[in-house]
Length: 290
Image 1 (cartoon, helix red, strand yellow):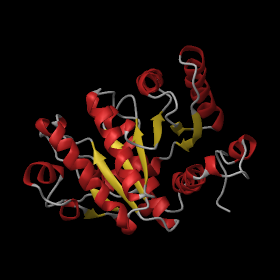
Image 2 (cartoon, helix red, strand yellow; image 1 turned 135 degrees about the horizontal axis):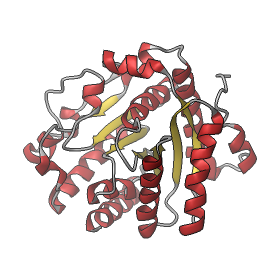
Image 3 (cartoon, rainbow, N blue to C red; image 1 turned 90 degrees about the vertical axis):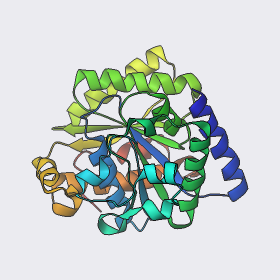
């Protein structure tokens, strides 16, 4: 857990010095295959459409996902930043609708074991994107490795993606348990992905919430549900974001609503106008854009 503590201390000191306003959101999952990276990409596009400058950091450092799903071929990646001392601006690529992407490497295991110097360099370079980024979405690897925990603990918000599979719910609980061991106050919000009804989503969330309440004694928040939509699989085949390829689909409308909820949540704790009931009303499964 030394990596997580190191990153968290560096982050706090740097924020004090710079007065940074960039929001850092880590999006994670207990297991792979729940659609986490698709959530990251499409949430980024939806936030960009709301006039926010969004950067995605593909933090599954040894198994690149973002560029593959979007059909991109970056000339450089995170290995060049860490090992070759390239500046972060040099390795970044443009994604759909103006989002920026910091690409990971593919099949290079060594990059997943950063030494303290490499950690410091990575954090220093990430701080350099504040001048052109409002929201940094960190797409972590699945699971609870030390590196994943480093990114979770150095973020201001954690979004935990799960689905209907019992294993994904159990593994999501494991993520909450490990994070809570080090910071019981770390904000964790849940997205239940690929549900056919709101009732399905509520059942999954309640299972997870009840376990967290009973055994960990802390809170998690419901961020929303994302519907099952065949358009997602079609977009993956096309190597495009579903919000770009099928903007009128049900899932694209859901991502638009989700982006609005996320933006409200970023200021929720500072607003006297928002209360718990107002928050719950924003979570309608089939709510159309207003």
